[in-house]
Length: 190
Image 1 (cartoon, rainbow, N blue to C red):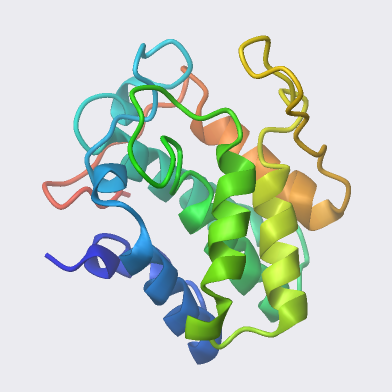
Image 2 (image 1 turned 90 degrees about the vertical axis):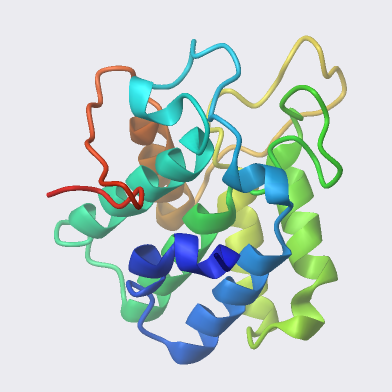
């Protein structure tokens, strides 16, 4: 199956064709491991649905679903909604680096932004749109922006409403109390 097909349902939430096609391109550029990994190697920081093979993909799908549900409360314009979904779809795309490492790379929020910028010539995004996605992804860890095992790396804190929103969706998707059912195609059951 083509990588973008994994997120077919989620990509359909992006209304602007250029943004959607650009997101599809970025998804196809993500390393193969992303589509197989669990969200947390220990299971300590994510709910049961995010464990096992494909857990990271399910974590991302839930984060996007949370966002689309909350769009009814948070009144973002259409472009911002599209960029939020884009940011969430790729936010953990390099969780173990471009070349798969054994453990999560603490700086993965910065790595995905750099990777997006390195590939922007393949995308139909404006510089401003790229910058907004980079900032949303760079700050998606929220207050967990330092790590004793990665001294010298300080991730940015979310500042704008859209950055805080992406962090909130990612945070909620990682909560152990979340129970989400998926069908055989890893689509969320309603």
